[in-house]
Image 1 (cartoon, rainbow, N blue to C red):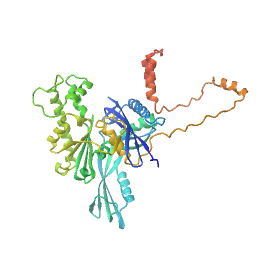
Image 2: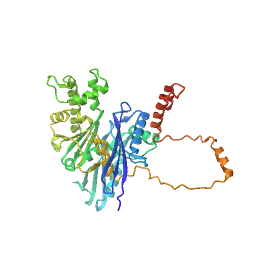
Image 3: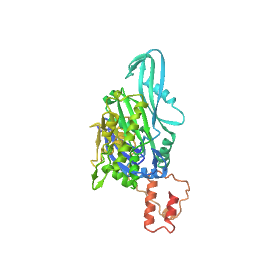
Length: 450
């Protein structure tokens, strides 16, 4: 019997890059990552919020068009999207239910409590998800309430919130400009933690840290559940900008940071790498990295917790985590053990050996979480090949049909541009300019199109 296979597509829009991925999920829930595409993005997104809808639409369209080649003749027509950025944080929502008599606690009852908690969200923000924090039955803490009996039920949820502008601009890009369907949203840091943090680590207590380009998200787990989530508006790009103050362009500064940047305190001795002295550069790197780490450590106080209550330590992810000496510096400043995030072995298959798994951790984690939550099919239906039909055309109609070819199309109904429109328009205009086919100023025409 042939296994049913679903295809899922995911988009992650960050402050420095956009990533898209496509994977297949079999009936056993096994995920196979088929392809991942990435486009750099310099100024279209700030702190996780889309600022330039047009630039982001062109980049996403290009990524999806390339991914389509892996599933042709089908095409991606719906996607799942990650949420992350400066406005993403958690807020506690408590709900209580007094039952008429001692009754069994069912999944349906918990779903009702969750909906009630969602209704208590503050105004002016979007609720991305509601994560269970704790349950109490007849004033006794219960880890797994389904199947328990009681009358007085209390549930505490962490509502994950973001600015309404964040989701609105995502829909402007994906739904309005690219005519895609959004199947669901996932909080990036929560998806990554579900992929990289073990159940035992969550139960013991740990801190998951996603250090990105312009933001750093901290998620704290205890007793198996999310206890706290907040996003700090500082990230690894701040280190790049510090290096730029030494008279380097951003691309140069980023390369210098990746080649020899080190977060450990500097001794004053020369630190030569590839003929370049990094001793002065790393004074800036170490100072800024220490500031980022101290802001991360401060989240413990805001969550009303201590390092001793998180014996599983810190799990570190994101591009900033790959900075030389960053994890060592974090251990020294937080007095907690630190490990780099990685996926659970054997849970995900990678179809293309050229995919750099460690670098693509975030988008693979997103696909893994989507696959575990009964995803919807993201591809168009398989085209049905029709057999050609032979028809006899009367001789007196041939001339009429030939003449009808000269009749112009008078349908003036505006067409929605949809998938492929932005990238094709952009590339065709470049080809036209390079071929010298435009009689007018190409810059004026390009501005009109874009």
